Image (cartoon, rainbow, N blue to C red):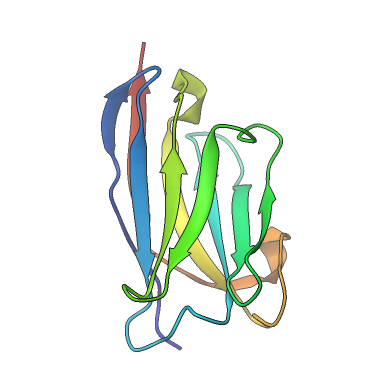
Amino acid sequence: QEQPVESGGGSVQAGGSLRLSCVVPRYSVSSTCMGWFRQAPGKEHEGVASIYTKTGSTFYADSVKGRFTISQDNDKNTVFLHLTSLKTEDTAMYYCAMPRAPYSIVVSTTDFAYWGQGTQVTVSS
């Protein structure tokens, strides 16, 4: 199983936006589940959003609802996480992951088996 590869992190001011990208080399994202997670220093992994790309079903953590959007582009074989209205508390390493059984939407961290290396998002006040 190929590992996801994230990109797009960076440093922004509060209120700003970023778009994170996730690709899985030699793997089609058109009919699978992909998830975004984050981990801030000293804190546990937090599920941010998941998408089941076959149906477009999505899940969001309460902390990001209305601010973050997970989407897919089958032509680019990429899953995106659009971050808007960023807050300082959004500062974290963001990871893309795939579950062991990607046949429906998955939201539990423990069900995700294949993780990328992460991309850092830093939000300053």
